[in-house]
Length: 224
Image (cartoon, rainbow, N blue to C red; front, top):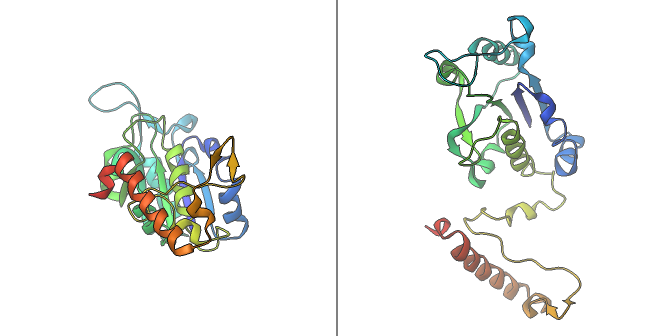
């Protein structure tokens, strides 16, 4: 899978993909992540990529021309399944969306910055708009890192135990159950007896019940 990310500040993404599971995915050749500097595609002086909004108002807006230059250059060698704009007013990202996007071959993410991007680019080139939450970040780079991580770990072969991803929270609209590990007893706090029973059917039934209880308590809207 290939994920390309267009950014005004590409250095922000130098770390997230160089460690842990994302590094493993890249080292195995299962995931390629390219961070593209938008400033390399502008024809304006001093590598300008933004300007004041027409009609006035605070903040700056990413111009359409550098974005189109970057997109059309990349499309000469890559056919994208989705061109994604990361924006607070996009569709809220969730596990189901991560599952669907992980089945694609090539994704392009556009990181918003300042007050956003020229609406004409959104109208004519973006195929999906995504938000990672109801809050505003300085730019879309951190959102791109979150989405790439959520997608990348689902690619077959990335996790040592692929069944692990299937038991994550939200995979079946339930939160994950409590988990325990050694020691069995710590300061008088014991691991639930059922987990030490060796009865795998009963353990799975207990975990399912605990998932329902936790979801009802913490995220009841998921059960709707």
